[in-house]
Amino acid sequence: MLRFLVSLLIISACVSLQAETVTEAINRHISARWAKQQITPTDTVDDASFARRIHLSLIGRPPFVSELDTFLADGRADKREHLVQHLLSSDAYAVHMAQLFDSVLMGRRGAGEYKKRKDQGWLTYLQRQFKENVSWETTAQEILLARPTTASRKGSTWFLFERKDEHQVIAEAIAPAFFGIRIECAQCHDHPLVDEIKQAHYWGLTAFFNRGKNQNTKQGPQIQESAIGGFSDFSDLIGNTQPNELVFFKADKVDEARPKKDDKPEDKAELYRDSEIEGLPRVPLFSRRAAFVDQVLTGHPLLATAMVNKLWAIMLGRGLVDPVDEIDSLHPPSHPQLLEYLSQQFRDSNYDVKALIKAIALSTPYQLSSNQPAEIYDPATFAWFQPQPLTAEVMVQSLNSVVRHVPNNELGVLNQFRRHFPEVLQSETNTGLDDAMFLSNNAEFNQFLNESNAPEHLVPSMLKLDSNEQRISLLFRSAFSRLPDADELTEINSYLNQRQDDLTAALHQVVWAVVTSAEFRFNH
Image: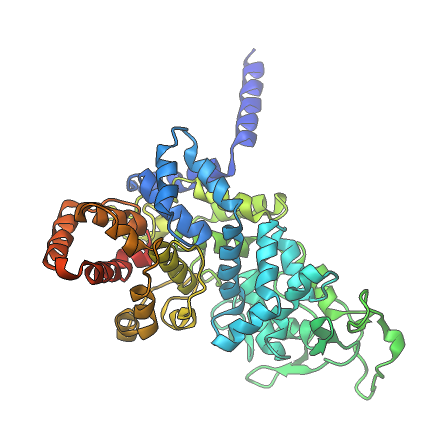
């Protein structure tokens, strides 16, 4: 009888463990640390604040007042889950994620580079990948192979093409973007602080891509690859020399016959096959780039871990490993078992980005208030929601949606905002005097606000209301998804009463004060 009961308990535990959702697993791991450290997290955020937070996280703008009211009136117990699913299914989600990952993968550049990314289909490619929820592993393969076989995928070549045959630059971009590690410090010697990252990894990753060369074709930008060359040696600081072989961190070496010292291989036609699409560069029978994608990238343990860490940081303000692109022995994860679990779940789901985002969005740490609990100082406990500065794209889109009720970020001043507003996934946010003055003195930004006078825009909508109290409430609900408190209402009402002779100008000034405030410029 006792054996039977023990067996039954074991079976019951296994069934329970199998039935645990990813969100429940997140909550279990996070709450276990709270219990261990005797931490009491802050309260759960209210519905209105959650609506603003999740809209900013998933589609890059606050909810319209009508959207907010619909959500608040929803009587379903699982209405937050329904809202998350609705936003993930929208076109706006795909646009927002494409903009985020343009910055994550490509970095901030000048206005000319952004135009090229758009013109050459890079942003369209990213939008399609996120809209169709293509496996992240597949997306990484397409970007790094850079041999699109359909017109809808042609923008995938731009990650390599924009870096203009600078193969070390390419290697230094691939490592953090797809594997969450930095290898720059291993160029001249093994990494001085991270023992596991070797100089051979730096030059090996470079070698995988050093036969590539940009080529403009009738089908658009392509990366031609040679079948020969790319063999060299590298030396450390004390003069030790070794050949650069096709090897990378946590991956087996890819075998390739090296020519003897005096051999001069000929670039013969029989070393290639024709491209699958007429007019595109021929393809080497042995392609280093394809070998990297097939034998290193595919199934690499850090591919899932790096993306999990990035998505966690995008949603919660910091990664389980911080900084997000330094997943190494020097930067252990705050919750190692959780990171390992989420990475395996991500692999098992075929790298399903939407499923992971949804699980995080419905978790307890994501839904906590941003009020930091007393005497809890470590943000890695995730005992409160970390306020996140809006990126340039989200700030501009939020301005458009609030001030003009237009859900897009096609504002002429966007490139200027990119110079003043933060990169995605920054560990720290620092605002200098130049940044602070930007919103006060930028002529185009102020012109945008002052010319927002169409009937559907915010200020004309406020003027249609019967009282200043109603106008202030509309402004706060539009910008902050909340009502003004008593002090805010009193101060702004007093100012507007003093400016009754030019109420339109006064309202424009109040709108300026709201949209340049810290509360507006952060997701919290």
